Structure formats: C-alpha cells, structure tokens
Image (cartoon, rainbow, N blue to C red; front, side, top):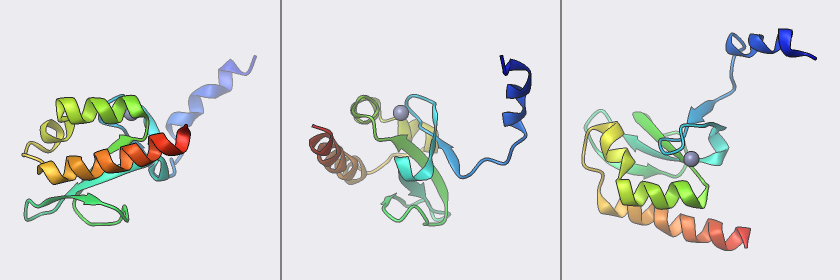
Length: 102
Ligand SMILES: [Zn+2]
C-alpha cells in the first residue's frame, strides 16, 4: 500500500537514463547502444557513449535491434540518413548479444 508515495519519482534526479528509440522505455545508459550525430552532421556509432553531439539510443533487446534495422528509427529521430555501416555495426553487436544470451 505504498501508492501514495510513489509519485515522487518524477522530481527525483535520474541517473543517466535514456530512452530507446524503438520501445520508448528508459534504460540506464550502460544498457543502451548509442549513435551520435555531431554538430558537423557526421553520424557514427559511439562505442564509448561519450562522444559529443546529439545522441540516440537503442536498448539491447533483440526485438528492438531487429526493428531498428528494419524501420531505420535513427534516421527519423536524427532527421538525417544514418550510414549503412552504422546499422551494420549495431547488427554485428546484436549478433554478439544474442549469442551471449543463448
Ligand atoms: Zn528498446
């Protein structure tokens, strides 16, 4: 019966939570893959998660990763054409992640 106090989460400072562009759920940064668009307009996969620029994220669920590739969600969010090698890179990681899960 702790319902009355649950609402305060909104004002609480969140620790680096980011939203997956596919499922729209929030995850800790470490659970997401990041793609960054720099001020110059270059789009690349950000392995470190620290590159400066506009970051977009996808969670590591196989469903989201497959959907991302199919729908190219990042293109829409960044309003730019994300190079195929960025998606290739993500797809490569996806296979690794799926292998680790099984
Ligand atoms: Zn997701």
